[in-house]
Length: 375
Ligand SMILES: *[C@@H]1O[C@H](CO)[C@@H](O)[C@H](O)[C@H]1NC(C)=O
Ligand SMILES: *[C@@H]1O[C@H](CO)[C@@H](O)[C@H](O)[C@H]1NC(C)=O
Image (cartoon, rainbow, N blue to C red; front, side, top):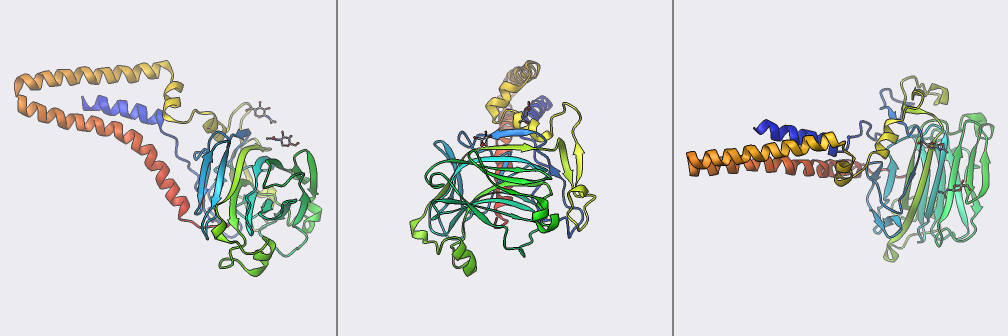
């Protein structure tokens, strides 16, 4: 009888709980280390509606600071010194396009960032300074190389980035990178302009959105403080970056990207691509398309599954009734005790279903928060 309850629980659990991500964030640099983990590819395109909700199944929260959905946006809030709330996509793209509709944070020394970054520190950036109400800052890095000082460039935005939402796009191919503000291509970079290609971003990247204080004088050198627009006065907080929508397109049809064949060159040709079959959807796209939340998951179940769950629940109820009757007749006291114990077991199964999901989220969040990395 207990096994019926257990199988009901298992059926519910397998259909209602999110599949845990195999891939976890590491600071494994594949150019210095072997065995860096494979990366889940987006392998398609998707629009993330940060105006409607903030989806912790697809985006990991890192670092101290609040990330909350409010009104028509998801807000990343720097309130206290040392905070740098960040969300990082669980998936990677290997050449692709990212459109970010956002409003930058105000505040002296506060930096709002919308970037692509790889595990071997290739990077393509949009950055906005809290007190620069006219320009957006663009930058790139190849393998974290900072020796060339012509990388950073700023471009005029029509309307203050802190007042209005704008669409900041990065379009990244093997041949060129474009930075686009609203409808205008403001910057283009070709591999030959980036140390003959060596500094050209070319490894799978994920999307990172975050706000931080470059003006935190205790944690930054004076050049960073200066670049960021001066020291931050935390008495003026909170400083809020707002994200409305992010469209991401992976130009490679992949399930997974792997570092297996990588050497110290960091060359894109050494990235191993586990391709999708024709018409196959990547596990990431499948996960995105799968309804989220217990209610939605229930409605997404096939009617056969629903009938099975209802039937076994009814079966449990019928057996319960029989057990009760049997126990009551046979030995009232002992029966009540037995039933209470049995009921406790059933209740626990049900509670575990709910708690599993919550614990999964809490423990993953704790694991993320424990690592402090600056964008
Ligand atoms: C986005 O993906 C869908 C399939 O999920 C496809 O039909 C559509 O053409 C794609 N759009 C672009 C711009 O690639
Ligand atoms: C962002 O701008 C690009 C270029 O004009 C456009 O193609 C795209 O549809 C815009 N995306 C969003 C989410 O508004």
